[in-house]
Length: 192
Image 1 (cartoon, one colour):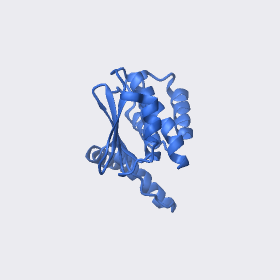
Image 2 (cartoon, helix red, strand yellow):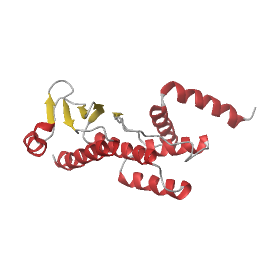
Image 3 (cartoon, rainbow, N blue to C red):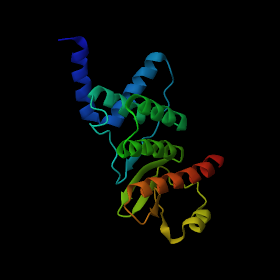
């Protein structure tokens, strides 16, 4: 048995045990440790939106290439990383199908969420719930109520939540509204 094939099977088993995002993060940490780069503890954001997001076999049929692209997407930390992976995907495989575009948007939502200390974003019927890591919201509640009116609800607690009524289950609208909400809040959040 070749060494590469042997380790490939081990790595594949680890991937199944810990989940893809966790596996990518562990792999990234090991590489950084080997290079002597200091590792910052980063909280993980859970995104559970009713959106179809994956790489179809018709678009990338090779499993290794697919894993490589999934890993690159999962490791995006800012808009520059997102743009680089979009360029790479289009250069290598052509125009992206909607499912891959959605996957990229979820990566964008994930890095924006980390900046706001959001631990989870989840669909709930025609609404989206944002759960925060800390019990203190650094948001202008009056401004949110002014902008969203009765489409927004606040829940206090150890991990406060904001529920934003999207009013539809349309995937494009969900992604657009979540991204818009985060982009506006990130600008305000980072100035406090």
